[in-house]
Amino acid sequence: MTNNLPEIPQLAPTSDNDAATIANQVVAAVNAYNRNLNHDEEVGLMLTSFGQTVTVNITGIGYIGTRLIMFKGFLTNNNAPVELLQHVSQLNFLLVSLKRENPQEEKKHIGFVGK
Image 1 (cartoon, rainbow, N blue to C red):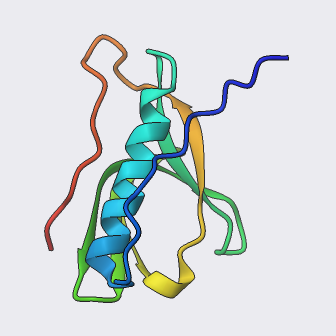
Image 2 (cartoon, rainbow, N blue to C red):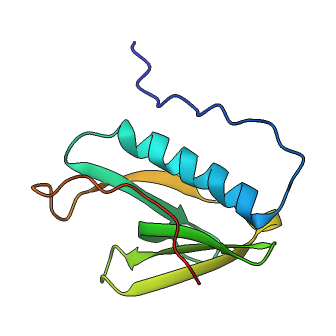
């Protein structure tokens, strides 16, 4: 059986546990996952900490101050725009494969968003 799991990015060790460092690591991991998907797929986040399962199509990742990570995107069930803020000590999400909304367009690269 062939293992088709994406390679985990090798990130330089850091003693910094601030939001900027962690956001950089999350962006690298998300883009590595996205690169290994088929042309008609893109990366999303699945969250289960709200009493239900919520899936977000990611459009950007950023940080606020030294302790908050921000995910921007839209809900897959109704296209409502969302911004998720999480403390760096509480990051917990599942990267999932989503069908691309516009497979004829170039595959998106997840980058930083400002706040």
